[in-house]
Length: 276
Image (cartoon, rainbow, N blue to C red; front, side):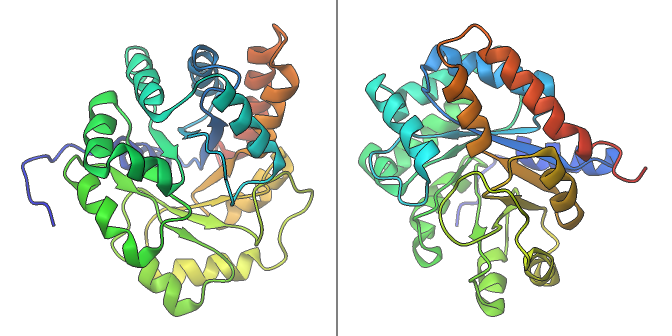
């Protein structure tokens, strides 16, 4: 384990602590970096922040995104065709840091990280202003090869737990969590869903029983009404596919940024003044 001099507080931890003090729940928004292009990605991130997003997840496009449904798969293909890669995404975040300090996570599969080089990923992420990573296909037992590199720069590796994770497994995965715990609300791939998983309350209760770390719920969240219900069981709500769909529908229109703003404002509203 690393024991250097780096002690500054991670932006993610600071943001979630601030929200808790204000009596708010967090809104974490996912978009695919480079869809429709990286210049527009920067504009979208700034619009998201201005409209109420608290943490940004930038998806690193990948040719075989096994955890993603068709909406994000198609966004990844568009981004790849536009020439998006990890190096360019780091530069995009570096550019964003001239205008915003909103926490930024990269959501990526492990193969692009491995090809880039794990030590170089951590160093370049820190230099660009990235705050951490979510890697859905990196098993818990093998996470140390990456998390040890991230720790050198005070970057977080967000753990994921799902309804299929047993109680003991959840306890193991959530030990020593930094940032927050990504609670996958249902089995299957990402995508827009209409309802709320029936076992969500039980699942979140199991997770809360073993950790005091902030909990964020994602997968299938697409409407303010869902945000309102889900926020009762967690500290932050993650919205991805519905936002990516909005971008896809408007990506050849000058209405794109305004559509993102309006949707984000509606999603954030149920998370403000939750205690009345």
